[in-house]
Length: 457
Image 1 (cartoon, rainbow, N blue to C red):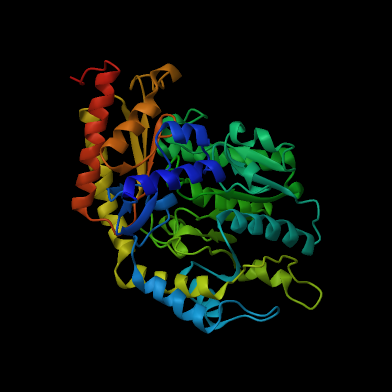
Image 2: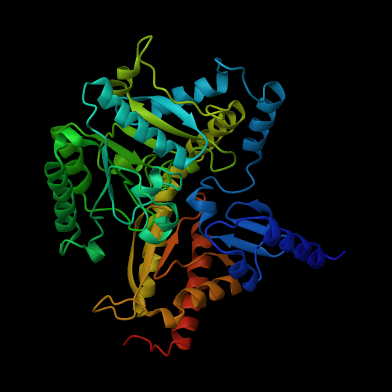
């Protein structure tokens, strides 16, 4: 059989037996998918027919150290050969060492970790910790959680309602009780009318305070947000210090969701460090092990975790794969690579170069309305009119045109509506960034030509 024949057989099996991620199998089939990846190195993967692709999003903004790191695979292999799992009521050395390492590298008094399998479970754990903590303190009425509109905290039953738009939640109603949504501090489209990042940040933080006062502080358990969001970027510098102070004043816990932006992606080990803010709970996944294996964590400040000490005062929460020793061993090796190879610094310096190059496209491409982000987590917003910030009508088929152009040029990058989220492995080089920007540049020229859009003068 030829590689093409074998690939087509696998593709048909995928279309017949699998639920694709957030896509329909009919749509995928019409596009000739799914692409079947067989191996990878650095920022590139090779498909089942031998074609090389650049993974512009590094998995799900998650393959931080890049593909093909044999050291991580070997660490997992060694642990699996010694002990692949553990008896009930016990733990293992790599799990303990990983908890200790997280206590060392996370800010402030964040020091006690509950391990889970993925980011959704980490945020579900944070939700449970917040509500249970207030019950321990004699405030069982604190059950409401304030999130932000158009945020993303996962797809499991509770956290689904803390983010996303109505379209992704409609099938799963009724809504989880007590979830509230405050404005997202995106200065490019500030819903409260802020005209600068600082003004938008202050207005959006103040909106959280007003929401707490309206709902009654005695009913609010926590505020959750992504310090740097994949879809909206970093807020003005005033935002997170203000939100931290508001939470302290009204007794709500602050949960920082760093499932995407943690472990170097924004140019700091953890994004909250850009503002010297220490959350009460820090949720981590993806970059903790560069998604080589399923592991994630909710790290809790000592002052909060101590509420669960005592013989009859434990946190009632159990997951079979929590603290899995093989995944923990892989995560330890992944963090070692991040530190030894200065990848956090690379994300800061090379990420700034990436952002500059993408902003440079605005001079030639009138459809590029905004380029924002920190480190190796960038967002590009596309508009039909830069002055009014009007988006493209559905009949323009902008997303389909862009995605076809990216595929043609060997980029694994999918535009979502009028935005592109970019988050490659943070080991990326300047030459590789130039290659990506060139391919995006050519695609934008092509799409603008198809839409009859002239070059800016």
